[in-house]
Image 1 (tube, rainbow, N blue to C red):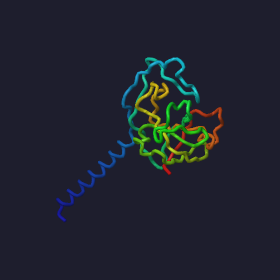
Image 2: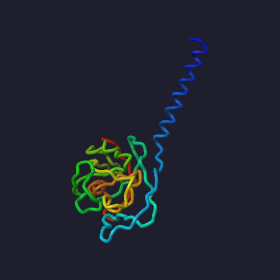
Image 3: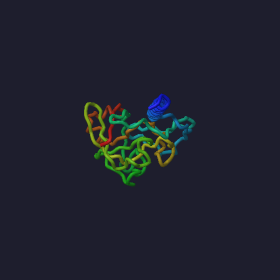
Image 4: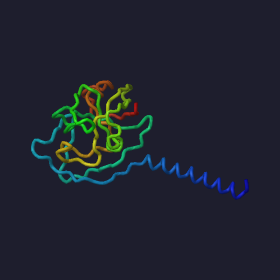
Length: 189
């Protein structure tokens, strides 16, 4: 092999490595995609179950079309949600158009992790509070829209949320009075 061929091959190899590193770094980033102006919920339409926050008129809420990159140990924030009819989760679950009992370990994932429904009805393992539990993905915790009837007048979800039923919190051994937000890791089963 000539010096020119070796130099060209070396240059291509360095370029390929640099491109891969840039792609990996880009995949780790998840920047906000916009802002949503809140509006006041109609009387009686703000469900405060599980300490749910309702939109405030004029307040701006950050929206995301992405979530952090999924790994074997994806860092997230666990929140609590009721997937039952009349619960603070709003309507039926996006994956199967059904309501789910609070006694069954089910979750909703932020928009990027929900991945346009590609994780629907798949199990994930949630690691937190020194324990692990398997839960089925049944819904999206929408990070792109909110403050409307469809989303129970709640703000858009942050980009790093695993919104879980009471059964998940119970399996993780978190006492009722401490349920709300918990730093966790999750992985695909």
